[in-house]
Amino acid sequence: MASVHPNLNDSLPEGVTRETMEVDVLIVGGGAAGLSAAYRVATQIEKHNKLVAEGKLQAEPILEQMIVVLEKGSEIGAHSFSGAVLNPKALEELIPNYIDLGCPLDAEVKKDAVYYLSDKSSFKLPITPPPFHNKGKYIVSLSKLNRWLAAQCEAKGVNIFPGFAAVEALYEGDRIVGVRTGDKGRDKNGIPKANFEPGLILKAKTTIFSEGPRGSLFKKVSDKLKLREGKNAETFEEGVKEIIQMPAGTVEAGQVIHTLGYPLKKSIGGTFIYTIPGDKIILGLVAYLDAKDPLLDPHRELQNLKKHPFIANMIKDGKVVSYGGKTLPAGGYYSMPKLYGDGFMVCGDSASMVDVQKLKGIHLAMKAGMQAADVAVEAIKKQDSSAAVLKAYSDLIENSYVKKELYRVRNFHQTLSKGVFASLPLIALQEITGGRGLFDGLRSHLDAKTTQPVNEVWGSEAEAGKLFAAENLEPAVQGPLAFDKLGSVYLTGTMHDEDSPNHLLIQNNDICRTTCEPKFKSPCTHFCPARVYEMLPSKLEPGKLDLQVNFTNCIHCKTCDIKCPFVNIEWTAPEGGGGPKYTET
Image (cartoon, rainbow, N blue to C red):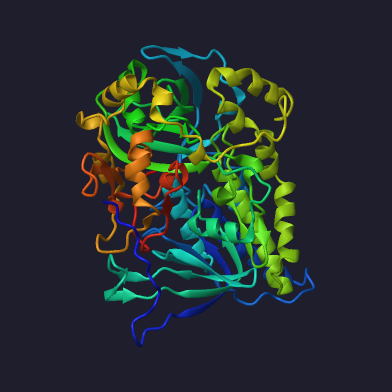
């Protein structure tokens, strides 16, 4: 059976107290947005003080500030996962001499192309559509890029605390005044062990949330403060990718190829292929999570993709050396929450700042982080981080390329969800009309609510059963180029303490057995890219199945929090330091 998270109280052992730390600017999340914000705060303060010292600015110098970045991963970059083709314009603004400082850019894009894949053949589009023009941009490893950004931050005096998961926002009324980090060293029942360490209380003048997609803490803040009221529902895509080591001298670095069509049949999405130095090919697949198909399984489809002649020929004699999975926000401009309030701002993926047409979000996250930082510095100068002051951040976003690029594709995801061929004329019209199309402000739906019963998607009950058995079971391991999910998880370096609380909260186990499995065939056992969820013979009702949660496999993609048709799974932050340990993604 699934293990429902115990009702942990946060009581501490006798004589143990939580340490309180006073912070000037607190950044929750050590990704590209958060690190850009931290670096910008530090350099803007440097710039201010230099102008004051030189007599070029009549103002008081800013005294040393406590700037803190909290990162739940074991180190910066451990949980960083992306495609990733980087538009360098935000990086150029943040750190103009980034090349001289050794920024890890794998390859400049020299060639790009788009193919349509049928079941057995491929067709190259004679003209690469403008959204897929990537020449002059850089193929990067986001985990490497973020480690480099962290080093630049630390050189400026920023305090980075890896292995600390922020689990609770602290309030005074509706004002955010900091966060509490999670305890370490509790057993699976929540009882403190011999190595117990209480979480910290960080009291902050200004807090910047940059947790990435489906930020677990900002989700609670957003609900409490109604920051998404009147906005489109958040929608997401799920991405999985592998890095394939090819024989020496066989790969030309700097190529970007996108494909449509095969292997996705009952859902919308596409694939990407990047080539980087060291004879490596990055192969990835992205699927929309508003799919109707309850058997959607991006990991399975990635394995199927490698069987297509076009791909199989490309990766022949290769070996998969790395794997990962993550969700990305797809709602765009109309899903962005209110970006500020008393004591806080939010930026990057947590604020739905991704251009899903181009699959680009890193430069938008970095730019938004920089703009949040600029306003945080103004709050320091005024000694006032009220909503009236922090509203300037929202104004900056509205007048920057963050808004411009997101507004240009504001109806794209909603339109493409209708189907690739059905949506093409509408998307073409959006291109002509600056993103409007026939109708503006197209609504989106919660991904959890779009799932339909397996029989309605796959046909009659008999046909559904046949298809389920023949086409939708996880493929067997097939050598160095194909993996089952457990084999793939091994490549992520994922680690969780088995004797720690289960961070995946099942609200009602009975639903899994009595309703979800018979009607939907347990979507979580398919969409999860890490085999966290299994249905095993029930001990309560013979002939039925119960859910088992293998939480130690979790790679923190958060798909389960998004796509469960009964909204029956809540992803919460596990003990700090747990999860994947990405190095090349």
